[in-house]
Each structure stands twice: as C-alpha cells, then as structure tokens.
Length: 328
Image (cartoon, rainbow, N blue to C red; front, top):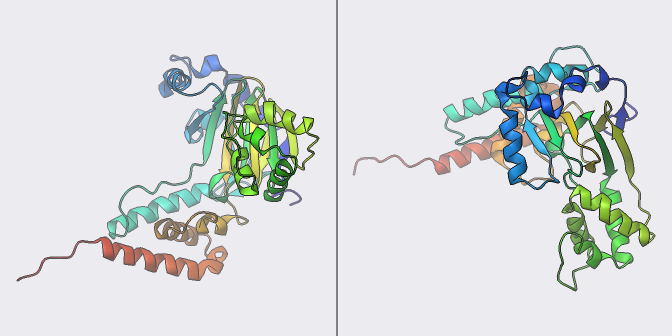
C-alpha cells in the first residue's frame, strides 16, 4: 500500500527463480528446432531488425500468455490471475476484463450495435532489443499499471510525474535550451516556439538513446537540475510502474524482458472512461459492460456515464442503419 499506484519500485529475488532466466537466450529463442521453434522467432527477429531502426525494441504481444512462455515467465507469481492466490502486486482484473469485453463485443455485433474490430487490451509482452534499444518517453495506455521483469541484460529507467515533466519543460525554456533540444534528433528550423507545451512535445519524441546519451549531458552542462526518479535494473530484477507516470528505458546491454499490464480496483474506472482520450461510445459501452459483469459495485460511480454510452451507441447504430424501402 505504500507504493501501489503511487511510485515506481524495483523488486529483487523473484525473477531468478523463473525458467526464463535460464532459457531465454537469443540462441534458444531463435532455434527453429528448439523449445520455441513453432513460434518462428528466428524469422520474426530477422525480419524485424531488417526493417526497424537498431535502437527499437521488438514487442511480441500476448505471446507471454501461451505455453511455454507462460511457464517460463509466470504472471501468476507476480499478480493474482482470476481466482488464483493473491500475489505481491495484488490482483489483475485484465484477464477477466478482456474476456468480458470480448463477450460484450460479440453480443453487440449480433444486436447490430457494432461493426468492425474493437480489440481487447494487450495483457503481456515479451520485449527484446540490442544494447541501445529503447522507446520514447511515454505513459502506458488505458490507465494501466505494469511490471517489467528483466530476464537478461541491463536497463536504465527514468520516471517523471506530470508535474516533474512540466517543471523540466519550464527549465529548458528558462535556460534558453529549446533550440538545442529541438536539434537533438535532426536540425530544426531556427526560432522554434519556446512554450511548455511545445518543449514537452519535443521531449516525448526523443528516443531513449538520445534522452540518456544527449539530452541529459546537455542539461547537466547547463546546470539544469530537475526532479525525477532513476534506476539501473539488473538481470533478475523487476520494475513496477504505477499508472499515469511518464517513463523511458534504455537497454545498456542486449536485453530480454517479459511484462504485464494491470487493472485493479484503483484504476478500473479510469480504464473504462479511457481518461485522456476523446469519448467514443463504442469503447465506453464495451468497457462498461465488461466492468459491470464482474465488479458491479465498483462500477456504480459510472452509472450515468454507462447509460450515456449505451444511448449514444444505439443512436449511432440507428443513424448508420440503412432505411428500409417501403411500397411506393
């Protein structure tokens, strides 16, 4: 309760027990005749790294839910899955939520309320990348919290709250560094607009290798000291990240991780409302139906929101339905 949904945390002593720490080497994962051969990761990795920049990670969505990956990186030893035993990071509603979402989607399609694909949230990933790989500064989608277990390699992480990111943008402007930050990835036009919104946009576009390798030295040389949390994660350690906190991670060595997105009583309502995104009746309706199926009491504060979503969706369906031809 001291850290849950409040601050990042590194857990030690759990991951070294997992089979992944022994078996998830590049050689074993890509061996076409080995344990993971049926997934054809050798072709997948070769294609990915031939078409993507070398500083990008490969994300394999939900492969972690399938054997043998599910055995090698056991989600149930970190978070409670369904009716399973309570774990160190509490319960994860996402498995039930995704199943209920899928069922609500099929019912809505049969009723003529929906057309097309409204995919469930991704629950877990296998993430692999060479040294220097890393994404940009971001917040995980759908108001999820997450954990990320480093099986092999080393990674440097940084976390910033919304207030800390705004403060950093203000410091960049006050020190006259906006143009230099804009030039970090490619030469920018002179006279860039020095506003907090613009600078934050610049910071969110910097790849991790630029963030740690160029931005931080630039700020240090300008004597810019800003609030944040940093940690270097070693193989066998697990990072917990709360929802709605900015973060960026850089692989210091070739690295392989497994991770899980999490929804519980603390962020279920924000997940359903999809806070920060434009209101979409279809997604709101499916989230409401899925949430009410398993956690009706938790969903009570969204009663009006859910009623509105259903009314809006039914109205949209009527408007999109072609008029029936009658006799002349």
